[in-house]
Amino acid sequence: MSSLHEEQGEQRHESLDLLKSAIREHDYLSSYQDIFDDALLLGFLHGKKYNVPSTLDCLKQYMYVRTEKYKKFTKTYLLPSRASILDIRSMNFLKQMDPQRRTVICGTLMCSVYETMAYHAFVMDEALRSYLGDTESNEFVTIFNFDGWVLRQGLQFTPRVALQIVDFVLKSVPIRPAAFHLVNAGSIIDFMMRIFKHLLPTKIQNRIFIDSNCAQLHEHLPPEILPKSLGGVLENEEAFRTELPDKIRSQEEFYQKLIEFSD
Image 1 (cartoon, rainbow, N blue to C red):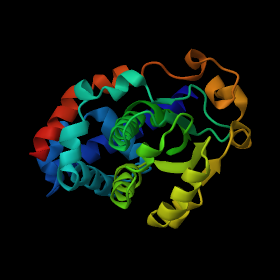
Image 2 (cartoon, one colour):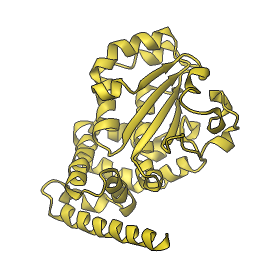
Image 3 (cartoon, rainbow, N blue to C red):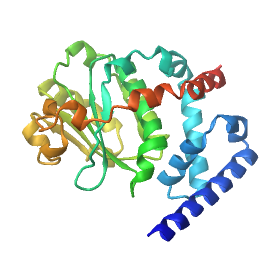
Image 4 (cartoon, helix red, strand yellow):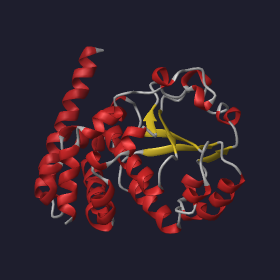
């Protein structure tokens, strides 16, 4: 087992060296080569099954979305030291995976749509750096708990915002959403999803589940891995990883560089 692990480690580092070399020679990415840390690059490689050309394409899209297409959003929201939403911990990873060995992310909608989207961008980056590399796949499951949600938050969810979410979450990171569970979602959420669903790729539409209560969520995810707020058996400190906000804050320099490239 140890020899297999060592062989896989050697292959990862060989792919990393090839990727770095390709970035230095890339017409677009060479300008950004100093911003990429090894952990992030390995996350991209893992998500693209260590295919260097595919990884380059994904990195290019990642940088384009953040430094050009939505540069105003990056400047306004993507700096951990200014992101008060990190203190709220409105999004976090479960300690345990689901029965299919997929990473599970839980979130609440306690802030504005743009702040929530920024937190999701932070979480995706940290998933690539720290969490998904330990799994066999790049799939994840997201749970959004709408308990306490108010209508004014929903009014911020426009078609433009929906398209931006697609760009940030689906098109510019090598992470595959296996399912989105909208829990405690009432008739208003159901109506809104009917309107906006057509903006999403068909595969993603089929992976959205509107669970009006926690019992419906438990048909997909066992209570044994969930916090009590989702009808599970665990206290928050037992259910969630506690280090995520600190990990995000430790990347302040990375996001500062992103903002500088957005000028």
